[in-house]
Image (cartoon, rainbow over all chains, first blue to last red; front, side, top):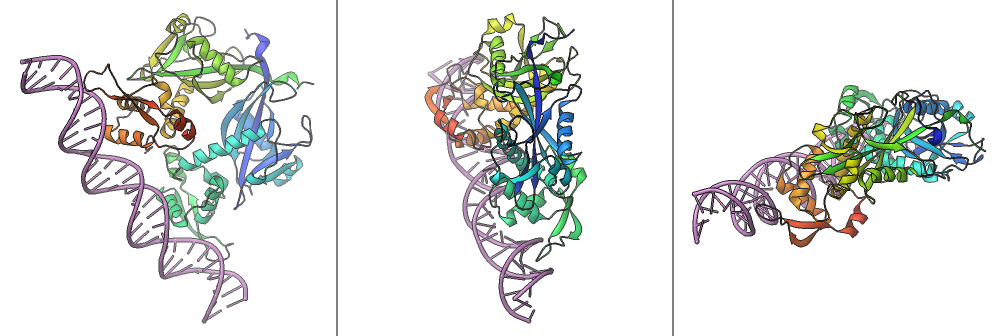
Length: 229
Length: 229
DNA sequence: ATAAATTTGTGTCAAAATAACACAATTAGA
DNA sequence: TCTAATTGTGTTATTTTGACACAAATTTAT
């Protein structure tokens, strides 16, 4: 038994891939060398296969561009306006991923025409991909205020000033060093590694790592990393 | 030009419809008199049509069961595990709706086998519909803590004690009357209508309505209706 | 008619969190 | 060794929260 055939349609997956270079929040876009909209900028995407779950499809597409596995990903929203794709009716399920920008396969990304853009220098994107990025950023702002997802964008070991710059980039707002430090440390999620940041030009900052146990246990607790005023 | 045909699949829309009866948060479910899973409980759903946007499909399906238009709806999440539907691979886009429980077409709902359940007495649901309801409730808890969506579940004019009972139902926790009142009034969203609640048994409570202007302007601001501890 | 019980509205106060701010320590380089 | 930049930590006033008490309104029981 099958359902009647009339409503079968194309299903795509698109992926907002975010990284952080120490100063700016960045997004990985591709310059399309294929139709439709060849030559324009878009998110990495692809069609969903009939034999894979949604998350697996998203992971596959992320891996095709970055070579990465085991990355923080979240399903964001589905886009299905009748005329969003000029070729034919296509519904796209959008995911976002947070990766350590130094950790992916640069050659692979380059071979697929992938380039990183600061959020503020993002070019115009095809279809409704611009809308997707906007919603993804909003979702990250929501989530990062309450849950420790920012760490996904940093190396294993990081300093508090690095973390602060990340939060300032996410919210596009300056934060008070002292209050930020107090707040982050009060979560109890950071472990002093005993090491210091060697490539700092002046005073070397303490390198912290995540307390994995607490991180996983407390992930769904609220943390108030930002005051959300 | 069309895309290659291999990945066209069935697209469904399912709808978590929430209401509030003054004491409990409730959900509208249907007892299926059609296959598959005839005789079991499920969310209201249907297949997406090729000529409608996702939101319109969701509105259509909500309207089929309740007769309502202009209702607060949000797209929640898409479900697409390969084997979630035993008939054939189907991806379902889940929406949730918040309605005034007294305001819908009871006859219509009854004719479709629709029944209201308290969240705590909810029967087992088909497929992954139970998961959908769980996620919808979580999303409402998140959103209602920061944005004024609770009002969507109440009549035009409502009292603060009514609103408090709603929040207590959403979070399944008792709240302090005095602190709740202070917090809600401090948002500036409530307008004293000058009327009082006639069907109260003892002291009559002030009936408030929403300040429409402020409501719309401030909707995307954070309000902290709950402290989220 | 009066008292008792229930519900509503508002006020107080101590504790906690936040925002604004200052100073000392470390390091590279002049 | 002096300067400039950056990091770590402490202080204080203000705001917000959480816990709690009392007075007013209204129905029901006596």
